[in-house]
Length: 495
Ligand SMILES: Cc1cc2nc3c(=O)[nH]c(=O)nc-3n(C[C@H](O)[C@H](O)[C@H](O)COP(=O)(O)OP(=O)(O)OC[C@H]3O[C@@H](n4cnc5c(N)ncnc54)[C@H](O)[C@@H]3O)c2cc1C
Ligand SMILES: *[C@@H]1O[C@H](CO)[C@@H](O)[C@H](O)[C@H]1NC(C)=O
Image 1 (tube, protein in one colour):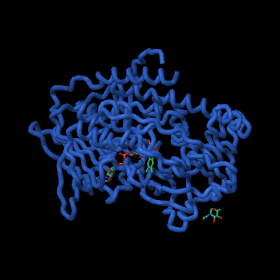
Image 2 (cartoon, helix red, strand yellow; image 1 turned 180 degrees about the horizontal axis):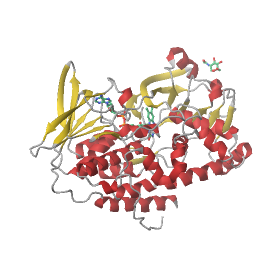
Image 3 (cartoon, helix red, strand yellow; image 1 turned 120 degrees about the vertical axis):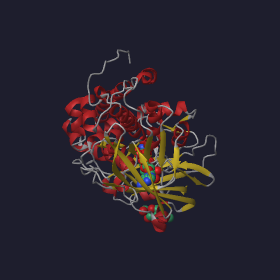
Image 4 (cartoon, helix red, strand yellow; image 1 turned 180 degrees about the vertical axis):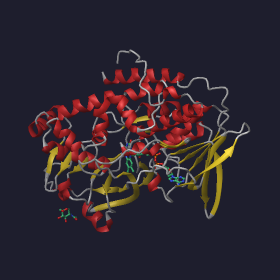
């Protein structure tokens, strides 16, 4: 049922995608050079859409100070590669699905995990392999809360999915607030302005369900509590659905594939600033050109561009990107990013750490924790290697706000064979009074990662990338009828 709906929508989007941009205004010369800062999924997807909308002649330079993929990365442990950054992709991620098909990559089903929730003293919920047993376990502990939350989630997803129809017809938005307003009205906008805790309480969900189930899932995905905004909370809850998937051989391949197929120049440099420069045109008109200054080792260099897309979190970028010589101050988010450690361990988990003294083997493959269990670990799950058919070694992936340390590691894993650790500035540190900053920073200067302040996922970044490329196109050719408008011709299809 869900499969069919998904498939239909997918073809609809691909089909509509052909008519996104009208023939450009012949009186306006096309841009010659575009810069994209960052080669994570946001930058790679932006390069793909820019090439699609501006044609093959424009030069697209992509700046990357680290490695292509950004927060999509793998690490080798005991001879196997594992995702050590973003691991799972939601089944309704239509843009990411389209990229994977376009690039000839293979989707791979993520194994369904058995969740257990630890509250600092014991497991308060333990999922079983049997659907019917889970059903009764959930009802026993939480009444019908889980069904009500599931329905709420579906209703919200249904509304949010309309973004694909808008984007397929070339609609773009200058702020997240306007985008959400068009998709779901005031209720939707409000979701970024109050906490998931409040939102669920309002619809009568019990505090027990919120703290134990919702809370542990948010800690597993975003490493925070139930005071994150309701929008990111919902996104987090969708990660509990079945049919999550990953890319065979590693999610990072989407980024390198898109950069390759978009024929970009990859510049290995650290961007330090974007400066506005006024330049006269032959016809006397004065236009802004953006000078992108960057470091390659100790040397500085720069490039001049008609359009610049920032596809990195500006404030957590190292060095921070400065905006100079603009007539108005540039509206950059001021909040901070959350530090997160991902530790891969091949070893045997100390079940008694979780006061587990069951007679049989320890079955859970995902361990969620509530706030009462402290901050030593946020959660853990069994990790599957990115290559199909490799013999399974038990590799656990542990999430923590601080490094586990030698002692912590020994405590959690009395015996282990190998360890790999990565440190991330993972996503914004959410609070309900966050403001989602604008996508447009200046005439032709855009910031995709503003969307992360509503929620940070691969698909959200792909949506922001398509939106950014559409904005750049429409604003360049002065086709303003598809910016911040709600005049969509609803296409009637049976979904
Ligand atoms: C541990 C972890 C688990 C996650 N799990 C999931 C998941 O399961 N599913 C999901 O959908 N999402 C997940 N996410 C979120 C997801 O990874 C992000 O939303 C997404 O990858 C962000 O992509 P991006 O391109 O915007 O940013 P990034 O991937 O951060 O890319 C930005 C790039 O810009 C480069 N850069 C920064 N500053 C400069 C500069 N000054 N000059 C030049 N280059 C610069 C960086 O090196 C980086 O490569 C997870 C994130 C983390 C950290
Ligand atoms: C396992 O965890 C329990 C409970 O925290 C602890 O008492 C025990 O020492 C741990 N085992 C090892 C080998 O560290």
